[in-house]
Image (tube, rainbow, N blue to C red; front, top):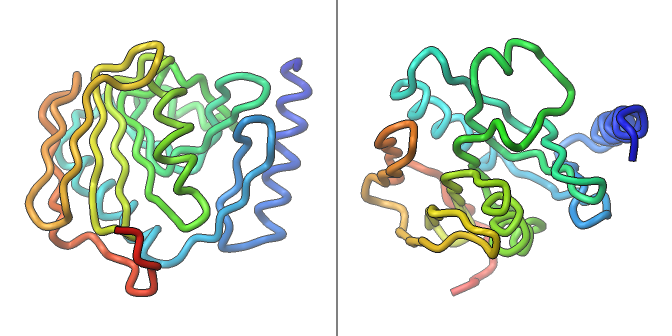
Length: 190
């Protein structure tokens, strides 16, 4: 796929998102995926963004729901990605996943498999040091680290409540999970 093909596809995805407000759209394994999101999804992103922003230096910034092209079949839009501030300032429509230092995904009913199974393999294969999954359906956070070609070699699961510390190349980053929202209508997935 050429750059103009990618630009055209990204433009089409942007229009598609505009036609379906409340849906998160990305390309996963060659298919366009649309997941409905609820208010607690955005609230989780906001709380985590605010917590991390207070801990990171000015050289780092955030991209949220912006395309990162992994290959012609996978263009992920992390809920939150920490990348260099100079790259965010470019205001591009798509970025290289090699810029991501920390990827954060908030699970929705339609993204369970992608967030827990597909994306960890891709993020790890590109050397993204840390991957954080926040799951308002289960009320838990999953941290993954030590990326390798077959996925992350380290993984911890923590029920919402205590503070979560991510030991990253950016330093120790702490997120208070006790105030993260839980979806009261989530089906029991225990």
